[in-house]
Image 1 (cartoon, protein in one colour):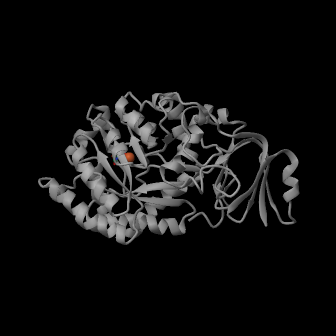
Image 2: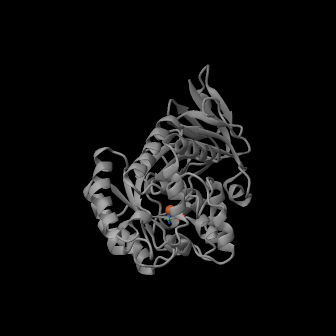
Image 3: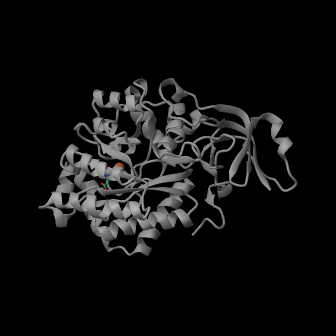
Length: 423
Ligand code: NIG
Ligand code: FE
């Protein structure tokens, strides 16, 4: 049996299996009145008009694409989705003038989520994370990068990475795991931070690598968190143990994080609100993907966004992600990100969709398998109640998803989780 999506008003293929830069970001590979033929878990044919009729089988599942925009399944290439609890209390503190790093230094922020995540059993953590993944799927996301970093000690970091592993098995969403023990210095190491760094380097990283618990390593390189030199040390240890590099770089202050990402040939540099022009140039030269997180700028009330336009014009491949976390971006919806990318960063709909599909695939080294609607790629497809791509970005604040296909299987139909996908 095959699945045919026919008469799609706006089929946004995002074709190409490479990092899109500069004007390539405006090429979303749009086909009007398009069709897609899916067989098993793969895309078998893509075309327009009546051509789909050649592939009709007796028991084909036919989905009507009239009035719809169809895109590759969205890819959330930067999240901290494994955590317990929530931090709504910080909202009032922020409104009264407290800033993010002050809250963290006073034992709140990341450290308060660390406390709750440590207290949570594996089962509880799995359940809370699974609910967030369900929401992501319901909003059109089919692949998620997921960082640890709310356990910090050995046991609870491994617990978090095991949650990733288990959910990757049982949830329709594919999960790409990142170890981020260098998210904050835990309270028990407050007065001996170098010991914490030694522990990461000598104990956790080798274990993770030997047991294939993560594919990437990340580090919060920021004034008041981990310095450039500390980050370099940690990330180099990761590289020596076969992990690929991502980096929280210049999220708030420009301390040379982008330059460090380029120096280490990172796969991606993330946040970059404070990135220097030199840093951006270095990213462009090395082809490091800039993963930008405009919901976080909005939520931190920074009154400034990463310079996405400048980055695109300077040849940096740009991706967009939610940063889903309990402190600076409590959202699961990449559709919400479309709004921030457009109104905060002045990105165009074509650039936005490429940044959430093919360039996001590049940010997690998956561009050969996902990120575009092309023959031979995985059948990960999102269908929106939207007459064209512009409309998808223009109309905001509601969930436009109609159908989601993951690995060739309908996992969301008519806006709700399909049978067998609802937990
Ligand atoms: O990406 N920057 C560090 N980590 C997250 C925030 C985590 C939190 O506040 O819990 C971020 O913004
Ligand atoms: Fe983050």
